[in-house]
Image (cartoon, rainbow, N blue to C red):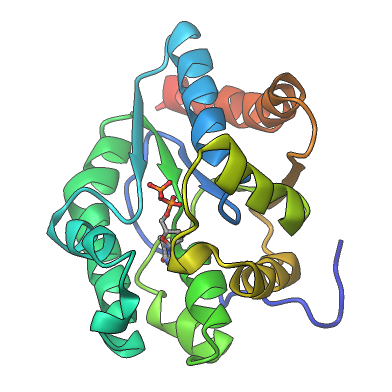
Length: 224
Ligand code: TYD
């Protein structure tokens, strides 16, 4: 699907010496990303792949600081917050993601730079172009699976399913803006998965996208 308001990314070729596949999950809160990552990780392990599951904000120093600020984002400015997301991403790439990909591990990452485009874009404080440019140090993933469902369903899952109060990022109006930005994104490596159905249906759909990539990558590695 392409449309005239599509947001796309000026491709930067990063020489990252990858052997493993870099698979990213994106979507607004309440889409069930985390459960699907767990399912995909166990499918991959069963089929003999080394797998690393990770997330952003990461568990490194910048990510920890971000998570501690989730329930009171007013403590820092939007610029400082964006800088923390970017510092966290650089650190996460250098310390965790790139070394794993280099040794052939499949990396499953819960959120990556499209989350910055959508969430920090939804604050209205930055232009999308600026956010894309500030992220151009980040190598493109092999595939980003964007889990989609109506915002109302996602809020219901956040509040009822997890019995949690939505954090600042999860308020309805804000999630609607975030969702609108995700909807406008278009990249060759971005695939949309409707996650309003059952966990099993979504799991199958995800595997349908991943299988051919794994086969291609395994073949490439055999030849090298
Ligand atoms: P989330 O994956 O929902 O963490 P958890 O399931 O542990 O609560 O991510 C935390 C929040 O961080 C989420 O609401 C989106 C936000 N976020 C951004 O605003 N920008 C970013 O660049 C990233 C990676 C996350």
